[in-house]
Amino acid sequence: MNSGSAVRRAGLITGVSLLLLAGLGGSPVQARTSGGDNGGGTAAALATAPVPGGFATWSDLMSTQNKLNAAAEKIQKAAAASTRNGYASVVAAPENRELLVYWQGAVPAAVQRVIEEQNRSVPVRVLPARYTQEQLLAEVRRLGENEAVGEVAPRADGSGLDVRWAKGRSRAQSLAAENLLATAAVDVRVDTAAGEVETTPFAGRCADGSSWCREDDSSPYYAGARTMNCTVGWPMNMGGTTRLLSAAHCAGLAETVFDGGGDRMGPVINDTQRPDTLVIDARGLGRMWDGGWQNSTYTKPIAGASFSNVGNWLCTSGASSGALCGIQVKANNLEVGTAYPLVRAEQVAHASAAGHGDSGGPVFELTSANTKVIAKGTISAGDVNTKVACTGEMWSGRECTWRFYYADATQALTRYRAVIVVDGPQQGLTADVKK
Image: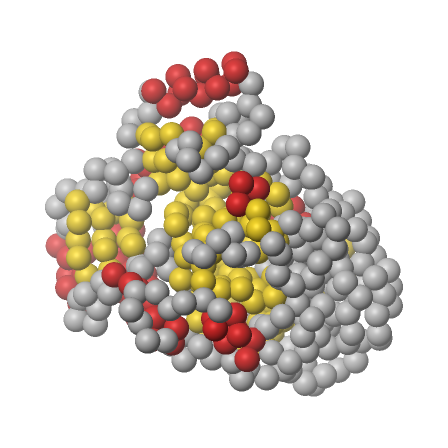
């Protein structure tokens, strides 16, 4: 195989160090059949995570969550089309067993009709919000420009913003930021309990993998496969051609990306720094690597993509950590350092959610039967205040965290005018087949 390496840039936060190590060789690439989706991969991860909310099984929980997210999407679309948009947010936590919609003022008749329609399939409750999402996000962007502000997050109930300070800020920067916060047009709370923000981008190094496995995949690639120091993200249909999503800090524009075995995948054709996403000109299929980091057995079909609503329960599938579950969305549309918009999620038992080598990799939701995955995002970075023992591949200096940040998949698809590639025949898409 070819040996490929390139200089990777600094990550999301200035001064954060990355593990910049080249990939190792492996066996020649040959055609192969896809792995099975018998549930053994994610099932093992779910077995270690207690089912919250009184649900009997994770399948029952995911069935409820799928319905809540589907209703939320219809309501959010109706809100976006409204001329009087008082929409603030939704909370789609399945343990609530209802969709909470936060709205400022009276709900317009057209939106109310959609809410009533969705209320026939899932309980929907409308609650008052102090601010609209538009008001909150305008302040997120304004406050996030100050270097002393490490994280700005809209509260899920639309009542204002939560701010965390950046580690290493100067006194002058802090004073300027305090004055900035005092002039905010919305309520702002400074969260000191969570610690000062310092993130580590989850890039890593390539292991010596065997053929036809997660750590040494071949074209067309599955989501969750290894690249030289990161992970393959979701496959996208862009104008009839499949391309791959990953994290922007993993490679630069026009840089050639190599897979875990050192084979050329293709160049980076779009590198969007702010939300930490990039596009690799390489082919992909509508499947995701499931199970452990050294794995040629478990894959799952991709069923679609949906927005990361607060309260959603998720899993990750990074190339170095493998499949990890018991993760819940805590906030969306955050600004973290210079990155925006990101989602913050946490492993609720404070076990590892992601680690070095997982950047760009899948964040996903399961369908009700746990047999398919729904794309939620791509892994970006971890909060170093929440370091824990890693799961999966180990090397000296590898770090993992229970709180991490990721780029929402639906926002990335909109950004690149793309649609998610799902398992099965693709309308208007030239078929790529692993034989």
